[in-house]
Length: 390
View: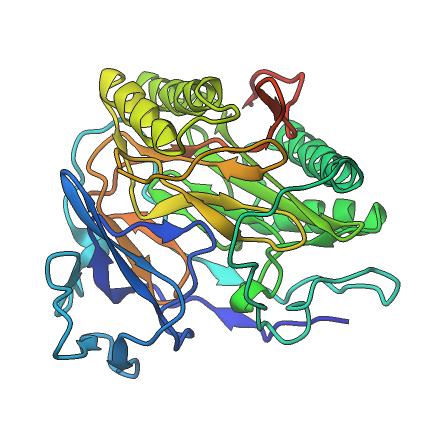
C-alpha cells in the first residue's frame, strides 16, 4: 500500500523561473533532486541546458522562499535560469488580455490512492527513487511492441473515460480518483504516482498551469481548459498520453489554443518515420505554433518510453540541431506544451506545478509513437475527436 502524507499546497510560488531550458517531461522537482547533468546545445535562437545526472547546484535554501539558488561558481547559468528575489504579489500581478478564464491557484492536495498488493509496480513505487534508464535508445521486438500497444491502449481508454466524465464543479481530485480507480481495476499501476515523489496518479493542468499540475480540491469552472496526462504501467511497460479538454463555454481564444496545440501534435506525427531526424519534430511544431499565433514552452520535451517511464531519446519541441535518427522499433512520446502568450514559466513551491509567468493559458496533447518499417504507428490513438463538457 502506498500513501502520501496529507499535503497542503502553499499559495505562493518558488524562487526561480526557467527560460529556454528544456526539461524532460518528467521534470524532477528542484527542491527534491540532488544530481544534475548539464549538456549544452547550441540551438539558435536558444542556448539551452538539459539537466540529468551530475550536480551543478551546490545548495538549496528552501526555508525562506525569497532566498535564491546558488550555482557552482565555475558554471554560468545566468542566461538560462533566472532567480526571482521574490514576487510575493505574484498572484496579484495584472493579467494580459488573453481571454475570459479564471486564474488558477493551488488548492489542498489529499492523500494518494492506495495500491493493492497484487498490482505489479515499477521500481519507484515505494521509494520514489527512479532507476537510471538505458544509456541508449531501446529497439523493441514484436513481443515488447505488443505489450507497449496494450499499455498505451489502456492509458488512452482511461484518458477518454476521464474526459467524458468532466463537468463544471468536478474537482481535479475527483479526476485523480477516477484515473486511479480505473488503472487499478485493470491491474495497472498509475505511472505518475510517487515518480520522484509526485503525490498523485495523474497530472491535471488547468488554464495558466502549463504542465504537471497536481490534482487538488479546486472545482472546475465554466470556461476552463484542462490538460489531463494519463500514464499507466501495465504488464511491465508504460503507456503515456494527454489531451486538453474544454469545460462548458470556452471562449474563442481558448478554443483556438486547443486547436493549435492539437495541430502541433498532428503535424509532428507526420514527419516521423524510419531514418528521419528527431529535430524535424521541433521544427514542425515551432512552425505550426507560430502560424497559429502561439508559442512553444521549451522547458518540457518528449521522451523514450518502455520498461522505463522516461528515457532516451529527448524529443525537443522547438527548433534544434539534434542529430538523432529514428529507427524501426523505437517508441517515444511527443507532447508539446503550447502557450497563447509568452513561453516563460514559474515552478511552484511544490517543485512540480509549472505556471506561466504572464498567466496565459496552455494546452497539451500527447501521443506515444512507434516507428515502423514504413512509417509510424500512434499507439495512443483514439476514435474520440473532441470533448466540450457542460
